[in-house]
Image: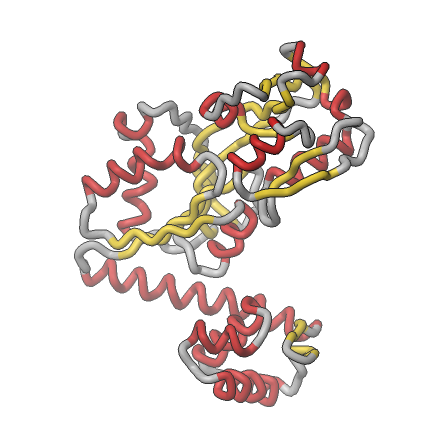
Length: 304
C-alpha cells in the first residue's frame, strides 16, 4: 500500500470523482482509477460505490478514508518537522480564514507577521468554519480560525468573544427597541449563511430552544449581500456585533438579543498532537504583540 495510492483515493473522495481527482494529483484519470482498483484488490474490499460519473464511500471505504487522511497528515507533519530540523529559511505557513470577520481579526496581524517574517510563504484559504476544520484535520492547513466549541480533535487558542445581534429593516416594528428575546423573531423570515458556516447550526439551535423552526428565505456567503437583503426587507439576519457596527446601513437597525444570548466565539485551531512548524508557532505568538492586540483582539484561553 503506497502513500501515492492513498493520496489518489483520498482525492477521489474529496473531489467527488476520478476526473477532478486526477487534476489534483497531476495524473491521468486512468492512472487514478487503476490506483483505486489496486487498493481495493490489496484490501479485498470494495471502497467506492461507483454510480456513473459519481462515487460514494462504502462502509469499508469510510474506514479506509478516515485512516488514509490520518496517515497522509502524519506524513506531512514529518516533512515539516524535518524541514525545521534542517533549519530551512522561511518555510510555509498554511492559514485558513473565515469569510466573516477576517478583516478585523487578521489584517493587522498579517501585516505584522509579514514585517517580522518576510521570507515565509503564507498561503491563505478562505471558507466557512466547518470546511476549514476539515482541511486542518486533513493536514492541508496548519492553522485555521473557527468558532468554539470545537471537537477534541483540535487544540485551540481563543481570540474573541462577540455578541450576536439581530439585524432588521429600520422600519420593522422590532427595530424600535434596543433588546429583544429570540422567540420574538419566530414570525420573521431568516437570512442564513452559505454551506459550511458554523453560524447556521448555532442559529438553528437557538430557534429550536426558543420553540420554533426558522423559515429561511435566503442564504448567502457574502456579508454585504446579507445586509442588503435585510435592508430590502427580505428578513432578519444574525451577525456578530462588530460586523454590524463596521457596516452601518441607513435602512437597517441592530438590535441586541437577550434570551438566549448568542456569541461569536472565535479561536485559532490546529490538529491535536500535530507538529507546528516555526512559522505556525510564530503566528500564534504574535497574538500578544501590541501591534496586533491593539486592534481590539480579545485573546484568552489556550487549550491543549
